[in-house]
Image 1 (cartoon, one colour):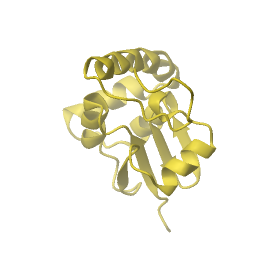
Image 2: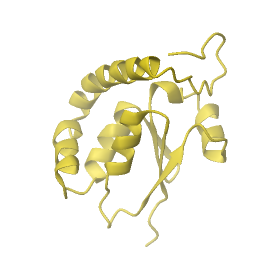
Image 3: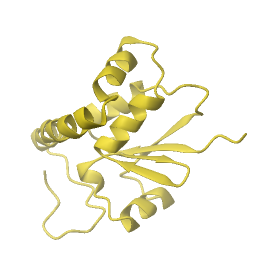
Image 4: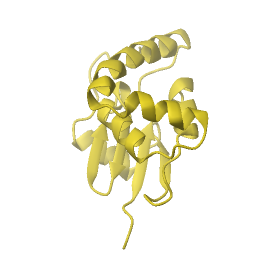
Amino acid sequence: MNKPELLLVYDKKCPACNTYCKNIRIRETIGSLKIIDARKNSRVMDKITKSGLDIDQGMVLIIGEKLYYGSDAMHALALISSRSGIFNRINYWIFKSKSVSSLLYPVLRIFRNLLLKILRKTKINNLSKNKNKKF
């Protein structure tokens, strides 16, 4: 049986996102996870933009043709993650609940945006919104 393609698209210039994405491990039975930098032009980013998803407000997990955004991506990653290592165990226990993921993700996003503002990073602005360059 063919395993679906798993893509995780995120802002590589965000230290918190980068650490998370480099440490998340999915179960081998699920497949392998390919990490994609949202700041680089790609067909995947075109698909995300056409779907109307603001990459500055949430990472995207793509499994086959299905897109999971923000808290749904974190929740899905928790469910398919390996339980090896402390990071993956903690991630699973926190984000295995869809309701907890939905409550916690916006709080994490606020801290992420604050961090990127302090670091003077610009937004990706994949939806080309006016006056939407800075955090």
